[in-house]
Length: 187
Image (tube, rainbow, N blue to C red; front, side, top):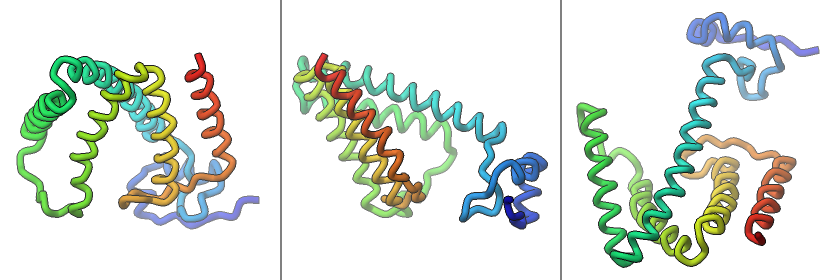
């Protein structure tokens, strides 16, 4: 039998009737005051997240192929300059269009701005890998390495992200991913 857990009235008001209905559908998580039953809003968020993640994956594959071709013509370093200048210009246009004011750029910790040089490194390493290995092999290595890194980042809550524990039994999924990668790489 599931023991009733009191729900904060402010949460009920904020989440509406859906929250009260969902509060009884499964036992609450040990550190949550309401249950984690997915409602329409959560399903929509998950669906949109899935679509945007899939779209970014397609864009990454296209970008890798384009950067490899550009680096053949321009050379690696000038490809980096051209692509990063276009990326900076595109980001600036988007930021000016979507936000009316400049945020406090010194507010975040300085180390987070290393994402910029990491972007340059990623662009260079993908272009080099695609030229040497082809798209499928490069993408396979990227996906496996990215999932392993994401598991650690989520599990440990690195870089200020919320910790999302990764149960040991889910390592079976990571192992299957690695096994699938081996099949792709041998073909």
